[in-house]
Length: 167
Image 1 (cartoon, rainbow, N blue to C red):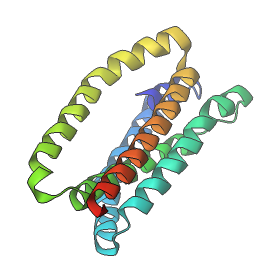
Image 2: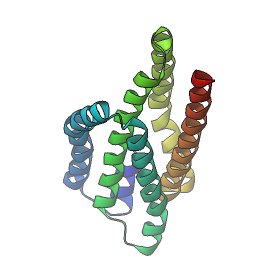
Image 3: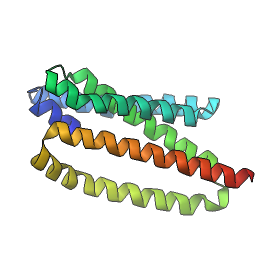
Image 4: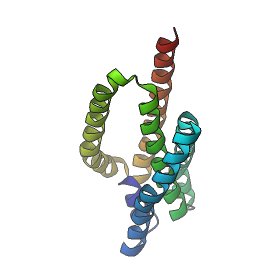
């Protein structure tokens, strides 16, 4: 939502340009997710793909407020953020399936999807409030900060869980 609002408010995009940005992100989910997911599954690069996609997403998200301040924000920058989100989601799902023991898989999936559902339901309301209070660039900055926090959490959980499997 913040990406589309950034496109509308900062770049002054019209309805067609906003629809194209949204379509790029959804088409990436449709086409890129399948090929990236198969690549990650075959090559076993779930962690690397997740780390790379999250790092690139964080860097570009962090640059949105700066690019906005200097008037150089582009639709391409926003589209790449969406593509990185798709890659992150694909690799996270694969990593989840390969790291969790089979006896914990159903409970883990239930907990994961509960968290995702809460996030999906809360995101528009919290994001809209943040945009109203602080503006679109600040909301995108907060998105970058939460992406950093989520990546750090995943790293700690992965290291802790990996240590419990080996030791």
